[in-house]
Length: 257
Ligand code: COA
Image 1: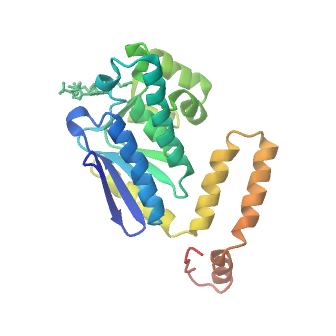
Image 2 (image 1 turned 120 degrees about the vertical axis):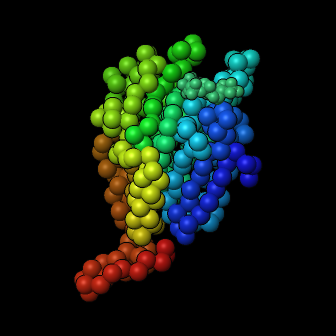
Image 3 (image 1 turned 90 degrees about the vertical axis):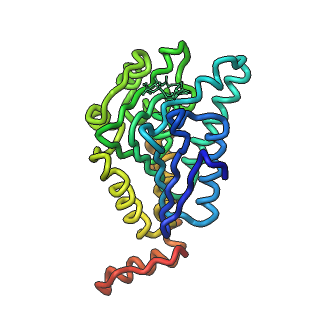
């Protein structure tokens, strides 16, 4: 794995740090491919929850403007598709991904956070989709995932104005779940990730899948997806253990089977 991506593991929890601080962790092709590779590595080692953060003062200050400047329309579309592939991989991973937004999360950085299951932010975070300042639009899912996260009217305002919002505003509109002091952010994200990692992994993966698939389906079809996923949980030893442990008034010991 290249040094623009740092991947560490603490038991079932993994931490991915985007490590290009001199360029505010801008998303080059190398970074996007590194994120995708790291997600696959986590999947192979059966990570139960992944945290994504940035080195230095930024989470990610956007797609790499220097790399994009002279792109042809075809190259730009291909670059957009590469960003989408990373986001799609993150969404289809069987473990939750938490964005720990330590600073600027702009453009592709905000989109990277949106491809995570949910986000925590530091009080220093600044978020936005400033692409219109460069006469382009979000290209890594920013129009579609942002509208699903904060609603159509708020997404329109953010994308049309390109304005930056602070962590308190991001919390108010539901773009992030919680805001912490900078030196507490990672510890809080790890605490939540560790808690998720104590649950039955099949159930967590099933919930993630139904959330993602259901968001694009009519309610009745989405509910059918939930019915099927609920049933599938009963194929696992963990379901038997979880329910037996409750009835026997003891802590469950999940094995991932
Ligand atoms: N792509 C490529 N390089 C970027 C970048 C990006 N999205 N964002 C920052 N950088 C680079 C700067 O070019 C600079 O490089 P240099 O030192 O070689 O000149 C370095 O990162 C530091 O950025 P700088 O602008 O000097 O930091 P700042 O603290 O003054 O400003 C921001 C921070 C985030 C406000 C500013 O960097 C910015 O507006 N970035 C672009 C945000 C954006 O439009 N993102 C969407 C892209 S589609």
